[in-house]
Structures are given as structure tokens and as C-alpha cells.
Image (tube, rainbow, N blue to C red; front, top):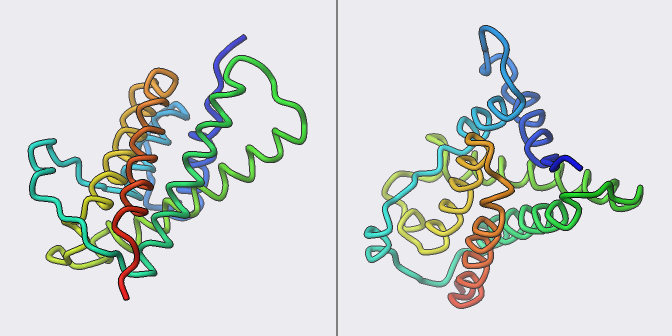
Length: 179
């Protein structure tokens, strides 16, 4: 049975709904290409080199940021894990419904995170959050996800993306909440 990648289609459609006119294309475009472009537009998450991780800091996070990253990372991770579970078979109707909801939620949350914390209109370039380990790990996960969709290699990279999302979530737990 063919492999499935429903998360990508939903993310692309959501981004298209949000930025419709901004996504002007000429000629035919595959769904994967549209998704990669829309994720890139929504989340221009910087892909820092691993060597730059040495400069990352880990301080207690502000509640708003912590909540946003935990919700977005958890929902995307759950969507990818459920998609992985049913990669080679058709899921039951109730699971299909749950998948659709998770995909819609993860799209909304990741795009919201990108608009609030990553985009030019988000936090200032010199904000300390941009040098935080959680910002780095979540950015790496989203960047990997974007690249996997662009290269049509989500099935190969899904475990690594999930691992990066877990690393971001673990770091959130380690650093705690700012008072």
C-alpha cells in the first residue's frame, strides 16, 4: 500500500488559506512543493549550524512562550506519530477523524508560533528567546520537517523530526517556567 503523508497536505491548505494571495504560483505545482513553500513562508525558522548550539542558553521560559512551544511541538509530534503508525494501512474511521483534527491543530499552532516568535513581525532579532535552546531545537525540528516535505522524504526523516520535537519538549521541562 502507498505511504501516506496527510499532515503535509493539511499544512499546505491551511497556509494557503491564511496567505492565499501571497502564494502566487505560475504553472503546475505538486502538493508537496506547495507544502514546502507554505511552511517556508509561514516559518522561516533559521537553521543554525550545530556549532552554534554552543552559544545557546537555557533559562526559565516566559509562560506565553512555553505554552506556545509545548502545545505546537506536542501536537505536531502526536500527528507525526499517529501518521507513522498508519503509514502502510488505512486507519479506522475514528482514527482518521483524530488524525484530521491533530493535523489541523498542529498546522494552526505551528503557524501561530511562527507568526508570533519567528517572523519579522514576531519577537525582535535581539530577544533572548532567539538564543534559547528550546527555540533552537524547535526550529531544527520544523526546519527538518520543512526539508523532508520539500524533498519528499518525510517517511525517512519522520523519526528524526519526532526526536527533535521530543528534545525541545524535554528542554522545556528541564528549564522550567520563569517567575
